[in-house]
Amino acid sequence: MGAERDAVCAAAGPYEVRALPGGQVLHRTGAFDVLAAGVGPAAAAAGAATALTAAALADAPYGLVVSAGIGGGFAPGPGSARPGGTPAHAPLGSVVVADAIVAADLGAETPDGFLPVTDLGFGTVAHRPDPALVHAVTEATGGASGTIVTVSTVTGSAARAAALADRHPGVLAEAMEGFGVAEAAAAHGVPVLEIRTVSNAVGPRDRAAWRIGEALAALTDAFRALPAALPPALRRTP
Ligand SMILES: O=C(O)c1cccc(C(=O)CC[C@H]2O[C@@H](n3cnc4c(=O)[nH]cnc43)[C@H](O)[C@@H]2O)c1
Image (cartoon, rainbow, N blue to C red; front, side, top):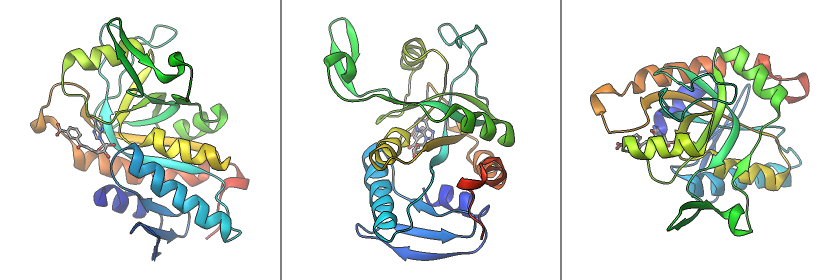
């Protein structure tokens, strides 16, 4: 988490540190603010909601929330075809911009398989960022756009990776915070994006193959490119 915060801050110029209730720290930067909110959807939602509320109460509401960090990339395989037929693939070091931010394990296990809470008649399992914003940021960062699933348990088997790819056609990446951040942003009526740079392949654990340094460097590059991709109303002049 600290490494991801530093990778994003490296693109933002000088910043000062502000403590928020709950021990979170908000780095107020030139181009954007950076919040290191913790691991998992609950910590991410709590941190993002706190920062959004603090800003709104200070009459300085945010115009955009971006959930970002490293993540797992899906490899092409059976069931991973994107709508339109292109195989879904997010190689190590690549950038993924979410066109859908999906809670992949929010639901119920039944004898017939997993059911999302929406099939049970309540809740939300997906947020869809503004397509024009997704397109602009994908182009500017040289990334790919697709579904990013949010999980509470990192996928560690080929079977689970295949099940996720089957259930979410067009999935490109997996991480643990996006849906929590998107829920907080939605509660505040603020647009949301999720940007992940790929540090590992989703599937069986293979620590020797992780490329965390490469993914962190790609995260810095993505945030250097981000401000110019935003419409003027969403850009902050330092
Ligand atoms: O111990 C493992 O096998 C393992 C494999 C991948 C990631 C982890 C983490 O604990 C990372 C948590 C952190 O990083 C993001 N992240 C990075 N890769 C993935 C992934 O493949 N699946 C889900 N999350 C990932 C995540 O957003 C967390 O912030 C451990």
